[in-house]
Length: 293
Image 1 (cartoon, one colour):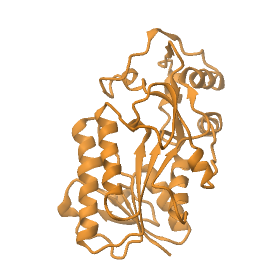
Image 2 (cartoon, rainbow, N blue to C red; image 1 turned 90 degrees about the vertical axis):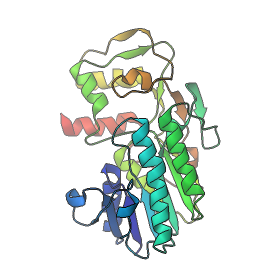
Image 3 (cartoon, one colour; image 1 turned 90 degrees about the horizontal axis):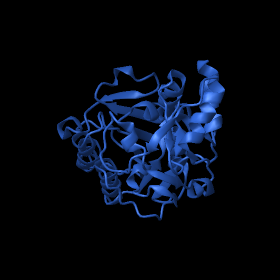
Image 4 (tube, rainbow, N blue to C red; image 1 turned 180 degrees about the vertical axis):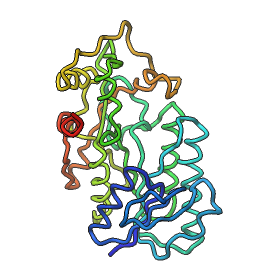
């Protein structure tokens, strides 16, 4: 039985924690307000951005999984979670005499600047221009520089239960197919996110970096058209002009954040022995549509 801390235990962390607990491990879920954690996860009230709250970590941790996410899409929030939060947790582990055998960090494919449909893998340059990718990339490096065995997992867009924005936009008629060259998108189902992390915790000698996306980096227009067909609604209209280039980042205008058109390869993850429950958007969204019809 391993002793595992999930720091920033939100949706993905909770899904992972339940699987680890079912496998016989002792699991702690760290978050500001852990009262909503399900049975099987031991609650740990702490704030990763406040080092003073991190003095009561469970002793003898075998592994730490950093799954925290920024509360808002702002430079301040990203710096707080992916830089200050990582530093604070690493300092707390050292301060409390911990010797974890593995650290996992949930990163993002937003660390890549490629946006012309290029294929990228773990060896591709990760030189994001926006604050979000830069902050996450710094968080990766902090883990790698910690002196403990650390693995960063760059996830594509996560969807699943409670993450149905794309389905909802097609159903409500607010979705728009981008004009111009194909806008490639990369995604992974929430359940496969947790399964990837569990797989890498169990792997005897993992690489320090993995891309975690499904087998099908698909043009957004194709995905929207397929969803419309499944829902029995009109295909989303085509935008009147090509999509905007990467640049300004704002949650209120998603078009500005969808310009990172690239195709991510999961070959390294596949070669490690991982198999997907939802290998493509049709399987993943199909399962969600079955539940939510």
